[in-house]
Length: 221
Image (cartoon, rainbow, N blue to C red):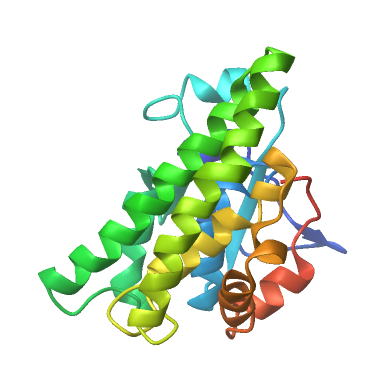
C-alpha cells in the first residue's frame, strides 16, 4: 500500500486510533491539496491528512503514479490528479451536475480558474528578480482583473454561484486554491474584490468546511 511508508499511526494514550478510510497525501501547504480537503470535510469524511516533508519527498516521489501529489487513497486504491479526484468525489457529495450539460458548465469554470492559477504559478517559479517583478505587475494589473471581471459576470448570471445556479465542486476548487494566492504572489483577491470575498465566506460557512478551516494547520500558502 503506497501510503504505508509515510503513514503516522495516531496514538491516544495506549490506544491506536483506527486508520481512516480516506488518506490524502500532499505537501504541508494548501495549494492543490486544499480543494480535496474541503470536499472531504464537506462530505463529513474522516481522512488522514498526510503532509509530506521536503526530506521525505524524493523517496516517495519514485513510488507515486506520475511523481506528483496530491493523491488520495481510498480503501487501498490510489487515485491521483486534483481534478480527477474532485470529479470522482463530487457525485457522492451532491456537488456534481445532474447531466452532461451541467457538468460542462462546472468544467469550464474550473478550467478557466485553473488557467489563472497557472499564470500565477509562473511568477512563483520564476527565479530572475526583474522578471518576477514584471510578471507580478502583469498578474495584478492585467491578469487578475480580466479573470475577476469574467467571474463576476458568471456569479451574477448564476445567482451567486459559479455554475448552474447552485453549489458545486467548482466553488470548492476555486476557494481552496484562492487561499494560497496571497502567499504566492503577495496579493489578496478577496480583499480587492468584495464579490469574491463573499464567495469565500459562503464556502467557508458550509457544514464540515467551517470546522476544517477553523482548525486546519496554518501555512504560508
